[in-house]
Length: 87
Image (cartoon, rainbow, N blue to C red; front, side, top):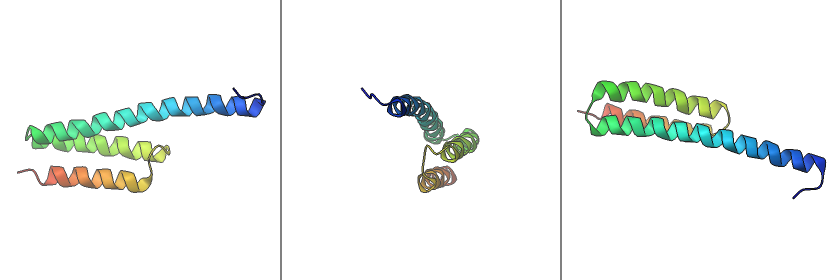
């Protein structure tokens, strides 16, 4: 355990940020799964709506610094490609 006051604060701040990041990442994963579930069900309208939601959630996570912008772009691109390739 840290003895210096600033080190103790850093531990608390890091724990808080880790919890926030974990919640945001979980939401992103859920949104992505909803897109792929709609694609597997071959439901174009639901997939398009889920893609819109997933894109929004991913972009918000990126703006909060949870994900790198390249990671977000890659995820959105691959999701869009999967939805567009539906019959």
